[in-house]
Length: 288
Image (cartoon, rainbow, N blue to C red; front, side, top):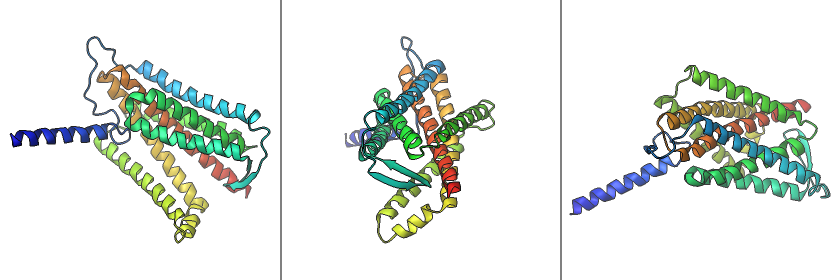
């Protein structure tokens, strides 16, 4: 009897652990989901995943437009009390504008985390994330680098080029998603996150703040880290394509389309933001 209880407990614990990792879109995403569409259930399809991905990206555009409308109305009469230098760009903004920017950034982070662990509500959390990300991008393009808005368009062109290139490399099987490839990508991602956390904590500690600031303030180090981030994000596109293939070819239920679509949209936006940051660094440095 005790043996049976122990086995049941172990089995339950194993399932919970497995469920935890499956719910993480970075660690495992949808690749180990065993559920399959039944005879009377619609299976996932490439077309619908494409439409859902486009939906998230269009919501991002809506977020950008929302900022522009607020900038021309709500923020227009606000005094520009804040002035600071951001990577070579002189920025003037109001407390209200900055408050909305910070709020949108925090909400984007929260919904991103929720999406990783609450897959059924991704249609909602993914939409909120995309809208907030669009708002943040618009603030950067039309306020932070005002006068250099073309960098936003240039970043878009480069992002599209990267997505198409990685799509071709995946379709032609020039880059194959193997178990080793996934492990390498996971290691790179964890390393990047760890460095970011350590840098953030180091900046908060008065004793280490000057050292961290001197490193992060170095143009070439910052540029190198950004380029590495872009490379990692671009390679994650390959895993996204493989995940979508897995979802469709293994006939997962249509409800998983939202997860696959959000994963791809998230990576595309990640690439865009990092490329925009790279261009800002280069142009800002050249100005000085």
